[in-house]
Length: 352
Ligand SMILES: [Zn+2]
Image (cartoon, rainbow, N blue to C red; front, side, top):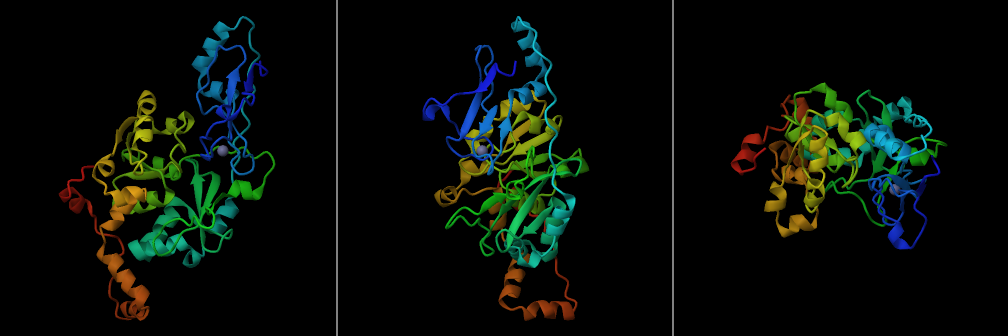
């Protein structure tokens, strides 16, 4: 049976596709059925970038998740197939490693940026809540731990930010890597999950908001806490059915980056089929300026543009550190939590 489904042999560039996990072009081989009965969805295949990405979704994984198709296959196949081996167990990160990273925030470039916008204590709360740490890989880099609903960590995504504008450092190269690939663990069975997934069971009544970027999930959750914000980690990121199941029976709003609205609306029918009530927030797509479009603006950038008084104070402190001391000495109270901007948002005709 296992010989029936093979990776499509190389027949020129058209037979190599974009990896659904790492988004690299022409590195992804899809599985085909040599008997031509089954056509697998596009995500069933293997990425050539074994160390950097490691994505491998086998026909076995596919049938595990779609017992109905397996049954149909058995009906269509004259020879009874052998029973499928259970998939290898998902691998997890060592908790001590995760805990150790949850410190040294003063060096962390993203933390520095968030503090300038939201204040230090709010930024610290967000880092702890979402399980974001400081990595050694690049000086001041940030590690976003992908934690599942049982609190187990699947992997960590390491990125480096500019502490002034909060943008990712992409020169001279894109500063992004993964903890599981740095560890180079033999037989590590990576199963990615939504960043922030561990927060879903904390309140089953709250609607869920999905953004692309981990950083944006943090920022948006500070401004709009009436949602549980999670990140897909990329345009296609976690939109595989195995990851979406957790959202069954929940209200979900998709907040795509500018320019990704079409890609994300294409996912809506799959989500609905899985029992998810889903809406798409396309306010930005309809209202963005060309400058915002060029920069791939997202909801967090938009929220940050609505400057908070706290942020103004923080930028004053940055210019004059003595101010912080004064505030402490004289017991001036900082309003660390940003004022709910929702009423302001409504005034701008921004319906949520
Ligand atoms: Zn890949």
